[in-house]
Amino acid sequence: MEESKTNLSQNPPEKHIFILSGQSNMAGRGGVIKTHDHHHQHPTQHWDGIVPPECSSGPSIHRLSAALRWESAHEPLHADIDTKKTCGVGPGMSFANAVRRRVESPLGLVPCAVGGTAIKEWARGEELYENMVKRSKESVKEDDKSEIKALLWYQGESDTSREEDAEAYKVNMENLIHNVRQDLNLPSLPIIQVAIASGSEYMEKVREAQKAIDISNVICVDAKGLQLKEDNLHLTTEAQVQLGQMLAHAYLTHFHPS
Image (cartoon, rainbow, N blue to C red):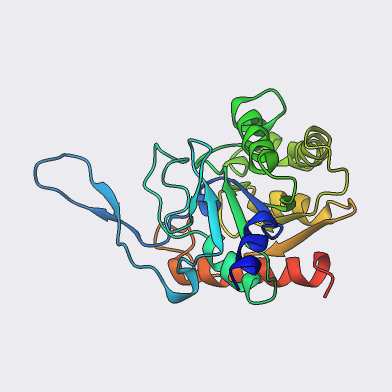
C-alpha cells in the first residue's frame, strides 16, 4: 500500500493549465456593489462575498498567484492581479468546475485580466502582454507534466467608444493570437474568445470583428443575452456562472478529445 503512494507522488498527473485574460468581465465584477459611506464623498465598492456552488474551490483547482506561486484557487480569482479595482466573481471558477467534471487531471488557472484595458495595451512589448506571457511560461516551468491547454479571452468593451479602435480590433486581436502562440511556442494553442455583451457606441463593430476572426483553433462564445448588472457593463454573478459553463462546453467540445 505504502509503495503505491510514493509512486503517485513521483508521477504527479499532468496539470491542465488555462490562461484567463482580458479586461474587467474576465477579472470578474459579479457581486461587486457600490456602498455609500457617509465619511467619504465617493461611493466605495466591495464584493458581497457570495460564492455560488458552481464556483467553489476544490483540491484539484489551483491558481498562479501574482507572486508566481501555485495555491488553491478561490473567488475572487483576480484579486491580486487586477489590483486597482474591486474584483468579484468572474467566469474562471465556474469554467474550472465544469471542466473538472470531464477531465481527471488537476487544473491550473493563470489569471491575467486587468479591468478597463484596451486591446492596444495587449500588444507585444506592452506591460500587460509581457506579464501574461511571463506568467504563462512560469506556469509550466517547474514541471514538464503541465501543459497550457487554452487561452480564455474576454476583452473589447474598452474598444467600443471610438470608431477607429473598433475598426482596428480585428487586426489587433489577430496579432495578439499570432504573438502569444509564437512567444509561448504553442503554434496551435486553442483560444476561446468571448464576444462582448456590453460597451459603447461601436459595440456591434467590435462584436463583428470578434466573430469574423477565422484562424484555426480560435473559437468564439457569445456573451450577448447574459444578464448585466445595473451598470450595463458588467455581468452579474449568475451570468458569470453561465459564461464559465459556456466556455467549458466550448473547450470540451472543440479541444478535449473525449
